[in-house]
Image 1 (cartoon, rainbow, N blue to C red):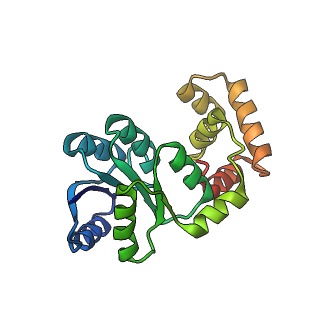
Image 2 (tube, rainbow, N blue to C red):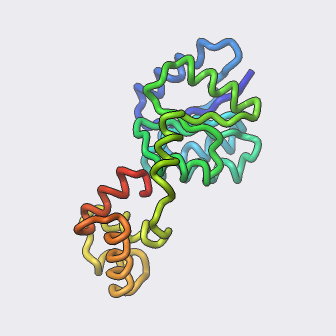
Length: 201
């Protein structure tokens, strides 16, 4: 049996996926989680063979959870599931140690097949998303520019961002200016939108 952990914050979707995977004779869902931190805790406890992680969850996304699970449960293969086929997400997921990246609107049979393939040591990546990621190129933003841009997403002032990230206001302005330039945006709101649409944040 392939022992699977499923992390998805929407209870109805999670329940449907558990039911569908439960129909497979060689797959058993041994743990469920509704957030990134919970996924890491459950993985640590049940030691699954494969972790299926939604990318957008409260308390830390699936990519952050993937990196922690790979560190704490190294034998567990991580599969990222997403509604949003954004090229930047794919790159970040692979860097975090995920071995598969699937868009949720694929047939359920493909999910079960992907679980079997990653258990055998294969990589499974949605072909359309792989092509988009190659054509989009790498994330032009530095990690610190991403931090500042993410902190600016809720409309925080430069002073608020500086306090939260322990930076000077001048440094925050420089990072914001650089991020706006690199995303070819007119202002920081547009820079946030463009960075999110690419999956860089």
